Image 1 (cartoon, helix red, strand yellow):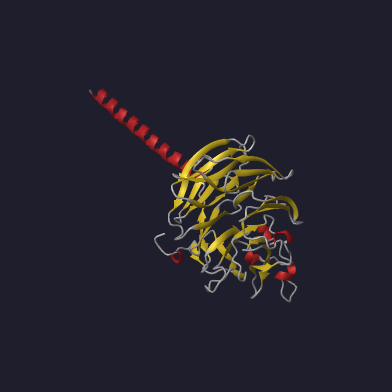
Image 2: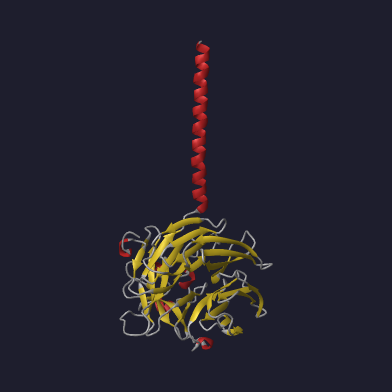
Length: 394
């Protein structure tokens, strides 16, 4: 980065190794009861105007022991106009001796689920009123996730796009899927992988894909059955999986594969489940991956602390933030409007990167070349005119 993260307005350090990140959805405001936002007056009908904005949720800590580093969930505020990430979190909620490793925010704004070393817990949005203003915060929920108590470390959590389904994958290789919020168990499979590294629902919620050791597995959610396995090449290791969010093209599945040459994006047809392409994108191992909500951008983080932003249309790199972090990139999350990317690292830093408009940049380049072409034509016409004048003069 050149400078320490504290010297960069969109990159800040928060004092704890960070493992999870997400954007607070706009629906979070509607999930906060009026009683939580009110004082002793009759202001319950007034909206908490000062907490409307871009907020990022961060999760991490020092784990068990006497390291002195707390385990906590943080909320930080991001100002897109000034590209400024707040120096201090606007809210903190400790998780005791349990480090929050992964988080999944409900898309409707109801709250978030957090994977702790032995279980998963549910948290809700809240609003503190320490002064005349309101501040977005978090609180522990009374909701108990019975099927996710004493289940060991869960490495992957995800809701479907509607928030009606929840899937979790464990370090022990067990895969579970539930109806939300009833927590009715619809998929319960042991030894799916050596350990479940990542999982994702298709945009329509019909399919669930999981990766870990061995081939990727594709599940029909409604039938609660495995429909196919996606096999890897001899030297490949599948690390991440994400369905395309594009609406104007055929739906595809992306899988990050590590191999001797680096890391590639494998593309699979979700009708035939045949591999379409393989594109080498980074020479280093990828340790974090995500796809934007509009489906146009990929983000990949490396063990070197670099962040790559790529186009899903042609697999070309659109931007590289070298040494975006001084440590391993542990999580990446796009904002709901796909305009911003938050990345976090074990070096305790969080960074927000603005996603530039790919079409706009291409148009500007086209205009630049057009201007050059017009200048050449004008020069040619002018030169020809002078030549004709000389011929006439003779």
